[in-house]
Length: 203
Ligand SMILES: *[C@@H]1O[C@H](CO)[C@@H](O)[C@H](O)[C@H]1NC(C)=O
Ligand SMILES: *[C@@H]1O[C@H](CO)[C@@H](O)[C@H](O)[C@H]1NC(C)=O
Ligand SMILES: *[C@@H]1O[C@H](CO)[C@@H](O)[C@H](O)[C@H]1NC(C)=O
Image (cartoon, rainbow, N blue to C red; front, side, top):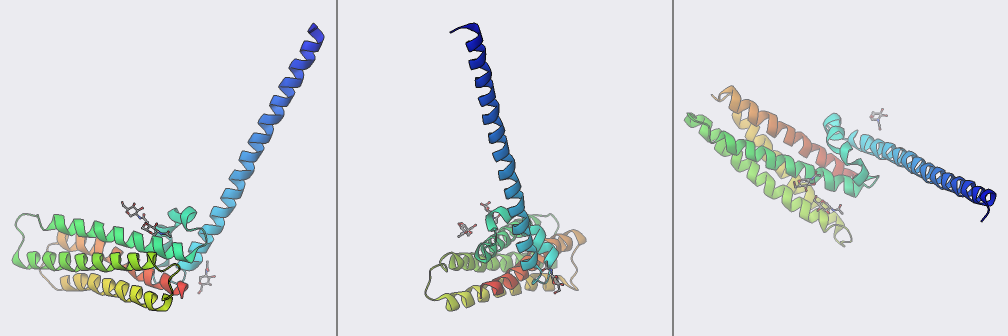
């Protein structure tokens, strides 16, 4: 190979390399743009679904991080909403459990903490049942029946959560206990209520 043809070969090689790099980065850019566009669409879907709930802000805040998984699928939306609610119930249950270990609890505080621990555990059971039923819903022949079972369990969980917070009202309970229970269980009840509203979108 002469020096000049070697140079030609070299510049052709560099040129091709540049071309290759450019096309790869353009592909990356365009993939990123498409992806951002999709995420926007997915978040819009969640926002509009959450608009039908009683607590739309809580709904959107809880669900929007899952936009890539939900896409625009109302079934996934319900599944993830239910799973988030169940997770919040586990969390509330463990806070209530830790309250029961506080020193110097009065008999009425013990009573209330015990009652809330019980109703929260029942709510966990009901939400687990709903999640299981929802998982088997796809492809099922008994769609209407199963939907109504799910809604019944979720409503029952909501009632149980309010049984706990209503039970505290007017009782002699120190602030720390009352606030911990109210904060966790009321948030949970709002998630649960939103879940029920989102299920209506599946009907
Ligand atoms: C939410 O609902 C309100 C009134 O019902 C409506 O004006 C608004 O456009 C809705 N927003 C979305 C994002 O769907
Ligand atoms: C529904 O949620 C459960 C629990 O998070 C998960 O295991 C399951 O894969 C989900 N199903 C679908 C179809 O998204
Ligand atoms: C609920 O918690 C489980 C276990 O920590 C986790 O795998 C799942 O992703 C959580 N669900 C949601 C919707 O974040």
